[in-house]
Length: 75
Image 1 (cartoon, rainbow, N blue to C red):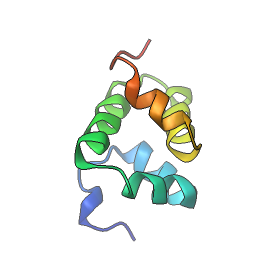
Image 2 (spheres, helix red, strand yellow):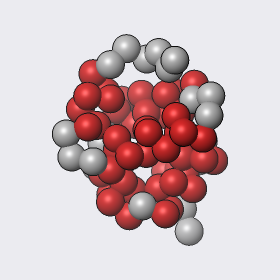
Image 3 (cartoon, one colour):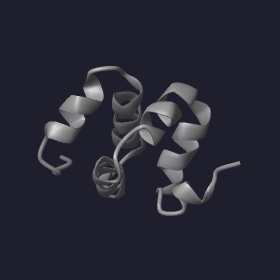
């Protein structure tokens, strides 16, 4: 069960976190500003593949830093 800290998480991202314990742990370790950035990127995702890339970036060491360092443009 997801706690109240996931109330603003888009459904697809939340489901991805439930299925990937490593991504969930890494997401929980982020600052609130970093979490908000990830949430905004998820809301901009236009496909299941884009959402999967975001989840994989959160799960993979080193990739999340690249994701957070990019401009908030999905395309």
